[in-house]
Image (cartoon, rainbow, N blue to C red):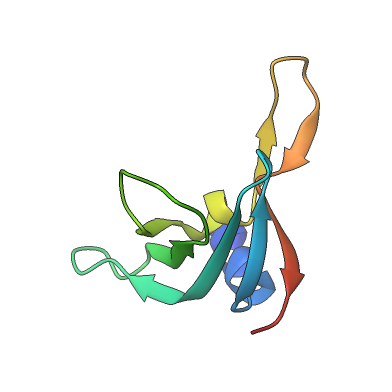
Length: 84
């Protein structure tokens, strides 16, 4: 497991997060990839109407990481709002 993954796991806590595009999500828990136990994912639910899916998973490093916008600005992909 990488240092980046360990750090993201330590920082993650269940709760409501705001995506950088503005929508809110309920992050429930971490899950483990059945084929590679070093891969950890955040399981989360969209708190808005979404025709594609309501339950999502994303690698914990991506969920807790940053997104580089077209203008070069870095923003947190998901910002923690409150506990559940």
